Image 1 (cartoon, protein in one colour):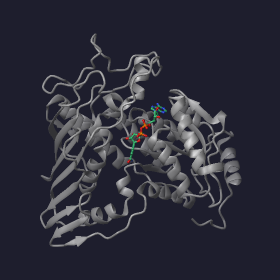
Image 2: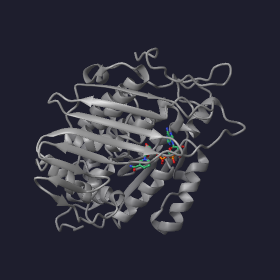
Image 3: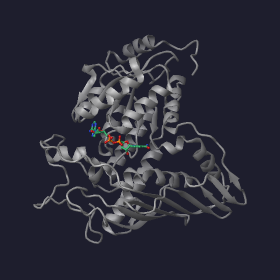
Image 4: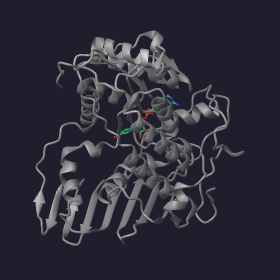
Length: 435
Ligand SMILES: NC(=O)c1ccc[n+]([C@@H]2O[C@H](COP(=O)([O-])OP(=O)(O)OC[C@H]3O[C@@H](n4cnc5c(N)ncnc54)[C@H](O)[C@@H]3O)[C@@H](O)[C@H]2O)c1
């Protein structure tokens, strides 16, 4: 990271911006029209203090010695304080979040954004991403935005709008689709895109794993609280597991397709082993979806979360001149045989190195289009597995489905409610309709 001699200092920049804006606000961002010098402190706010958020805050501090975490938000106090404690142990005084900058509740994200930070890290449950992203862009913040970026098409359209606005405002928007920042993956993907296997005809993407955490029910949990603690198992919060997890594989498939959308998708899915109600909310445990592209290419995607089954997280690309493997091989066979020997540093750190280098250099990264397209592939996948119908991209992206509750309070009803037996309604292909 180089400090440029003629860089305005942070104070000069903030003064100039404030004068230009006619008002001094706590939320002025450093990067809208000038860059930060290498030794200027960049203040970061964390929204969503769980496993990934805590990790991402660390990645930000690993990436740039002059980054400090100054504000945190979570809907749950205990989650925030656990994360804060862990980060304090590891990062000492760079973990500069005092008690007044710990915000809890559904509106906590706005308080972080308004607290004078330059950069926000968006790592809450996926449902909230479009709203958190919009507020961050409106306030002129640089953003690290975890995947998936929405859970429905309404959210995707909002994300696309925010990404455009970020571009206009010259804000950095770096996506947490981390394989795009993994050097070994880039090495093979760039070769595929450059034609090493000829025209890509078929892609197989798998994300077949075991099961994940469950956080149980607390005595005083309202329905909203219970679902938020166990957000993974509610499609309105996670998008289902094909959206939350398998989006990584769909993203690589989409990358090979030049991030152009498919024409349509069809598929099958269900809930074979997640039968224990109400524990597993309403999500499926397997999805198999075929995405059909205008040029005839098909993406065959499979994801499963079941204990005791064979695991596989792989990406295979068959083309007219050969076959490429990313996860599960890092190699190309056929006319242009190749084995990647590229060593990759932590892709999670690399995302933040790119973000902070860009902020300091006055460059702009905007990953908005691909993070929205890849997430929409997953949303479309869920639409076809839940309904059992073949659905076009056009219909899916324009779909009015909006999985939001009527209000964000602990007493409000979530959009998915248990029946009289305490069972959550699970989609039934052939019966379930999407708006
Ligand atoms: N890129 C990757 O490899 C990767 C890895 C893990 C998770 N993730 C993504 O990161 C996100 C978080 O996942 P996680 O594993 O950290 O889950 P987590 O449950 O550990 O953390 C999520 C946190 O967000 C909080 N939260 C929920 N709604 C909120 C809101 N409205 N405002 C503020 N905080 C809110 C939760 O209370 C929780 O503490 C997910 O989107 C997930 O898909 C990405």
